[in-house]
Every structure is written in structure tokens, then in C-alpha cells.
Length: 90
Image (cartoon, rainbow, N blue to C red; front, side):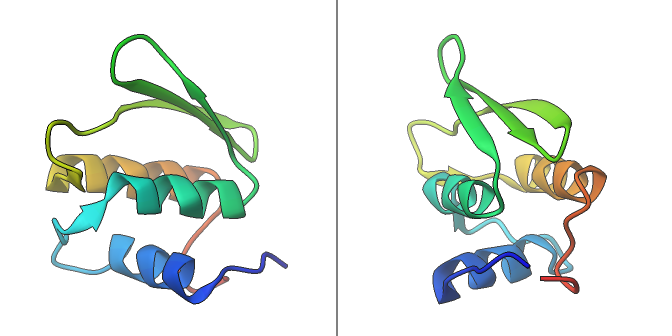
């Protein structure tokens, strides 16, 4: 079982809220993915490559704002579900 701190648990809960929230900082998403056992590597420009539970994805780190937009939140949610992560099981 994965141990998440309270901030990471809050980020996970917020990611799966409906309607989709647009107030999650990207650094909090990266912290959550690392806590879940994911690997993060830098790509070209603002691209970030993520590997978690056999699933790979590439995301764009938001800039100049630190806040992740709703479309990216939906993509991260889909990635987590594909990797076998959902808010209920953690």
C-alpha cells in the first residue's frame, strides 16, 4: 500500500473531483506521482515524461503560471486511471 502525506492525498482527491478543478499546482502533481512510485524525467522544452505502473505519458509543464489547466487535469486523471490509480483505493 502506498503511503501519501496529507498534501499528496489532497492533490489526489482534488484531481478526481467533479467538476474538474483548475487550481492544482503542477509541482503538487509531480510530488503525487513520485509518491505513487512514478518516474519523472525532463523532455524537450516544457515537456515532462512520466512512467508509472508500466504506463508512459508526456505532459507539458504549465508556464508562466504554476497552475495546471482543466484539460491537463483531465489528461492526468486519465493517465492515473490507466496506471491503476484512483482516489478510492489509496
